[in-house]
Length: 141
Image 1: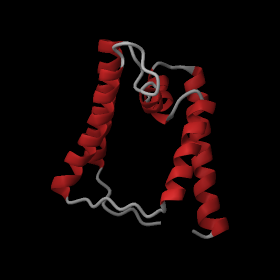
Image 2: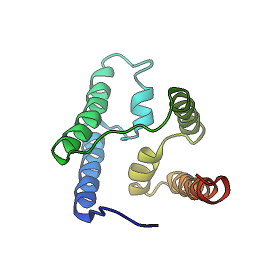
Image 3: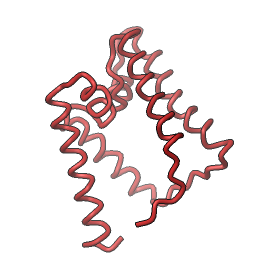
Image 4: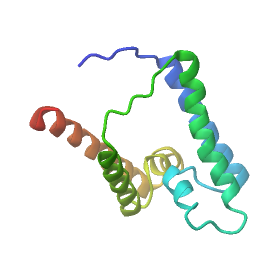
């Protein structure tokens, strides 16, 4: 395995911004920065609750775009629409099953020393390692 274009400085800056956003959302809004919960809350938002959720999601998209534009990073989606839809449904099912997503558990939950979030994050990571192993060495992808 070869790691190309490893940039620890940009990773550190990005992680700091993610942490800052999570702290600000908790301090100013009393909410956990779990992306699945924020997006899921848009399906049936409480009165006055949609604005900050939309702003957060739009900020994620704009932030990625602003980073990619000057660097000339192309966005390449190498999967068919059915695969993307099935993947999205499975991720949605998994976040419901796990009571949250990697951002909510991994960033915010671990920072709050939540035992539930620590176990969930360990489970996510173990599943990811197994999936990569199976896809690369068993299936041959």
